[in-house]
Length: 522
Image (cartoon, rainbow, N blue to C red):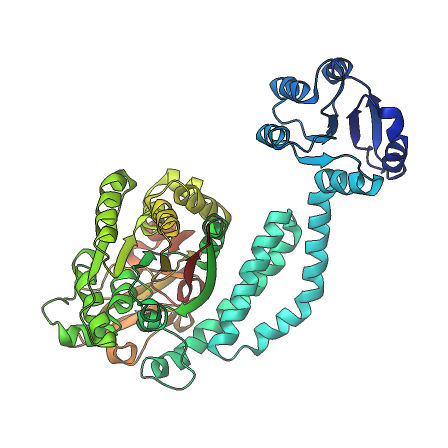
């Protein structure tokens, strides 16, 4: 069935001189009505719907900007292209301020007009078709890359490309191919778990081929920037790569972004991964050096209470000198004014490192499991990205990054771990003293009913974790499993299925972004 022609209204008092343009559009399948003045155009618009309006600015009677104002009053969503001889800035600014789709200065060629019309009316369809064609061309090679992945960089590159394809196809509206991307992601996740189980014990002992881990972030990315000018070190807790991609355009509007990645240590949870970032040590090293700080509570409030001191110690160890640090941990944007005031005081004092932790994404991820409203609002990965962006563009974190760029300061921005959309329960057997986490557990006599659902390291030392009481061992969930007890099977399934959780082994939790933001010259 042939589609109906898109309807265009062209308003210009010299319309007879534009016949070649009109004919060119009509030959391309567009229906074009031509009107010589604004009043007749407004009358026609009251009775007919048009997909696009081409509007001249300099006409007898009502000028184009006045007609545009009346069009916007009657139809705020009308798509309008201003076509004018005027090259004055105020005319262009007025038109752009009224949200015209494009601004063309006469004389224009038929091809130039067609290009603008095609972009506005057919752009989304063309982008959808191009995205589908590009993915279909790339898919065989990407599938082979996934099958052949054997190193940390191999898995990271495939995962990053799959995230980018998912976002591009989603933006283009090519939903039919999203299932193919998701299938590749599932295959990658399935291969990733056993590979990490084999390789991770070597990584944490400095084995060959180890990727950058949480313990390497400060040494690799922050230390090279310490040249006397204040540097920001910002951690957005629990941020997946796709969530970072969702907010990148906002950050990129005022900063150049040098993007990299690191692997979160296990368990991919705040008490372990974030302490490793700030200290440069694995948990067993922290416990040995600071035995009074570490207990077996597995609670962020107690285990992450010394991040500022850990960072100062690491900076001193790496630089050989005392490096002053201003540290902030932000749980709510209600305190933005106070945070901003303390931040400006630190900058005036030329504090070398401004370290800030923002916990909203983590709080939102945890709260989603407990709130039916949040569960509905953030029901899948796409919705979680949208919610993250909505928060970020109104957040203290965004204000801080803009302030840093405005003052010419560089920023190292990262996260401690990501999260995964958990769909499958895995039954575990444990004593009452087992920790409550759903993607990893500590306790005595821990055992998974299905060994394929969890990693059971030989000992706590295998993961560079503190030894704990005698008989304690660890389970770390693989793929998209979450742990349930046989006595509370239905309760846990009902409550936590489709939750975003972290602590386990998956690309979404372990392969996380770290970027250096450099302010653009003004």
